[in-house]
Structure formats: C-alpha cells, structure tokens
Length: 296
Image (tube, rainbow, N blue to C red):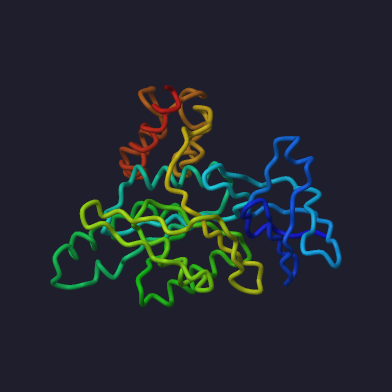
C-alpha cells in the first residue's frame, strides 16, 4: 500500500493513505543504509492487520529534500515577507527565493501585513505603502504575488488557487507572520502565533516538529514546520546561479562570452539590462553577493 508520511515522532511515522492514517515503523534496512524517512516522503508500507503498527518497506524517489527542517517533496514554496514589523531585508528574501528555485518548486510570494500600509494617518503607514509598491514592482514581474492582511479573504482565496493540488511549504524570516497565515490555511493545526519582540521585531518559533496537513479534497497539503529560516551555503556551481534568478537567467548565452558571470565582463547582456532598468538593482546586488559566497 502506498501513502505519504505526514508526521514523524519518536521513531513512529504516520502515513496517510486515502482517508486513513497508519502508524508505522521503518524497516531496519533503512538505518543500515543511512536513510531516514522524512515528512512528505511517498512510501510503500506493509499494513499489519489487528496490529497497532504497520511497516514502511520502501521510500520512493524524492523530488527534493531539505535538512533543516527535514522534509521532502515540496511542490511549492510560499515565500513570506512583511511590509513592516519587520521590514523586509531583500537579500534575505532573495536567498529564500534562490532556495526554492534550486529545489525546483513553484513559488508564490506572499506579502503580509499589508493592512499596515493602508492605515491612513498612522505613523509608518506611508513608509509601509512605499515598501509594498516597491516589492510589487520588483517581484511582481517574476513571481505570482499575493498581499495578505487579516481581512483579505479574496487574497487568501487566490493563494489557495495558486497552491491547489500541491504540497506547499511556507518560508520566510522570523516575525513576518507565517504562523498567522498557517492558522488561516490549516486552522486544525491550532498553531500558537509567535509574539514579536518589541526590541528585535523578530518572531519566536512555535512549531516543534514538522507535519503535513490536508487542506481540501483536491490533494492540497501544507507543511507545518519549525521554519525554513536559516541557510546552508548554497550548493551550486557558478554557472548555475544565474538560472536561480529568472530575470537574469533569461539572458544566458546572450553575452559576448559564453562563460560570462555578469560581473565585470565586457559586453554583458545582464549589465546592459540592469542599466536599462529591466533588472532591479537590489536583485543584481543579491546575485553578486551569492556569487561571492560561491567563490569563497
């Protein structure tokens, strides 16, 4: 029987097949091979009738996997940022986007706390509104963008359309409101929304383990994880990086030199596009920063 691991706790794996969830153990052969089942894995299992526990007998090939949090087969990343409290750090936002691009997932950019840009007369609202406009201008040309606030039912409906039938995960810096969005997507998770430190304006994590929740009867599922909030050094070759920035990658092969890295080379199509305003300066700076890391 085939199913999906939706939770793993204390050596037990909970596998959903159809409408039934089976508590399973993993065969010893996985440990011998250094393989650990992950939430999101598609598995074959042997169901033992009249027994509390069944057995995972095979882990099917993964589309992708991640170390922290340890999950697999993410179809779509919902990358969350906020217009304020905390203000977006574009290089950090771009690192999340590169992570998703490298994993080969679909991407939705979710701009949260948009109501704080609409509060006329309140301190900071004008700055938040300018930030919102800039985010839409920079990223709306590259990815689907939804603007979330506590009353944005239409935007929540649009988000659900974008992730329909997919296994989606949220990623973003602390404090941007991932837990609040998860509460709306999967109220059955009964998430605790992390409070924001007044001093640091950063959130506190509330999720202790990874779990995969069904959202509807169309195959849409959401990973609830302790958070994709930290990064490993990007495991990529120099020539790959441009393709993780779609607006840069589309110029591949159009430069004077085939191995152009789009830094200081002459007759570079990317630099020309940058000067023409077709590539955002902030995105190019993020690209240069990650290229420096790869070279180190």
